[in-house]
Image 1: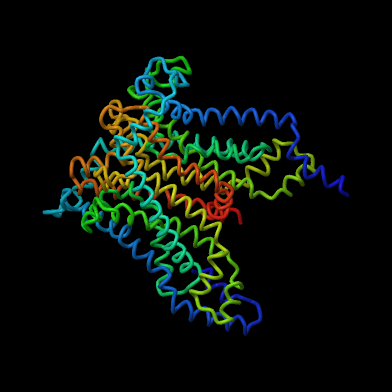
Image 2: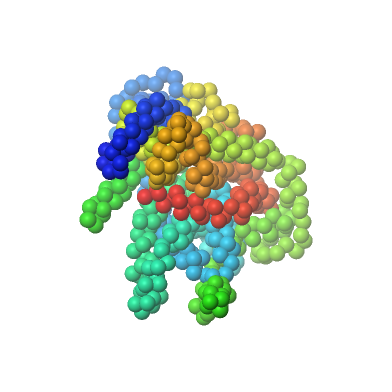
Length: 313
Length: 287
């Protein structure tokens, strides 16, 4: 976009060649540029933009699942949603889940990546072991941990010699979902960290060694600063994914909302309103609220990044 | 010379320094913790249903039996689900690769009216997923008459703004001189794209392809919304709904779960170096 045109204008090189190729590029681009993006845009318009617009419209109506006889109700759905304890509870559960998962995942993924990066033998084996759970479907991870947390027949209580009612007690249910999620998704962030570690130039460490820096100093003064960007990415991706938690929680709780509704997530609440209560208009309004929330998080991150860049200069 | 070179090459590989021993022990402990739930699933799947629910539980089966596996294949729709998953994931991956490579290149290197605005819209699309807009997406697909069809399963997964963005970032990094040489030789946009750009992008395309395949194979939420028909379900979907519905048979459920994970595990074992390289190429571009 802007960078492309700036390059074209600024390109210092032999002037005539630059002008020549720029015209060629411009002509080629004008002829075909639109066609390159057309197939994607068609799908994007149908399955992303249109549902969003449709959701906006439906959120102003009292539509049911069949879509017939929708009446315009103005902002009633939004007004109802903001006063709906169930919505705030489920939003609270998703937020609490996110708050528990994100720091743990970030620290664990970093630790695992450091291990896999620094152990010299059998690198492929560590990589495989640490990434393995992420290759299972979320629902399978959910079932597996439901089985492991089962009070009588499950392994967790047996191994630790405890009798914790993991899935039926409000103080443990969300924790159980968090543990399952950590186990299942840490591999993805681990892989991002591992790739970033491999990208740190070796000469930085060699120079530090020559200056007499020990392993701890090398980690604090080279590794951590070099991983700052990837840490930002890991945290952002994890926040966005965690707010949208649904699969494993719902499977672990037999498709219910958990003990005393303590694990009903925001996504689950939306689907219940839409597909169980058939209140498509209301569910759309909640979805739009959720979208605004997600967008705020994403924009907040962009704003942070920009601020940091400007501060760095 | 040779004596100096040899230790440099072999030393980092073979030495068991104290720190290496500590790290390896730590790594082994962590790996055991991470892998043991999977081992538990495997052992459970090799028990009889009655042995699987014995209290207290024990790790290894007393009677090793493939009963759960054969029962799963005989009674359930698991082969159907497997085929459905394969069809859906292969179609989604193919379409996503094609469409997002074209679009990524279009945004990175061609000019057309309204490009900046469109790019902004696509970026906004990064925040939209079936989890966020499930209900309106469902009614849209319903309106198109695609509920309970392969089309309905596949197409809504085919517009991932994230993949376009990743490839857009990657294409931006390819030196323009490579293209311009080809233009001067008289090649057009399309030829340059297919003969210059695509061959250079193999690692990135592989990463995008593999991650699209993983997320499509493992996708639960969308198939869960769009189909109730056991003949049309995908693996995660069928296992989570049908196998969970009438009194869970744990040995069978674990067998099904392992079978759902197996294809991806095989893919990862064979391509792990490319995957890490691809993440380095593309995942980091996400910033």
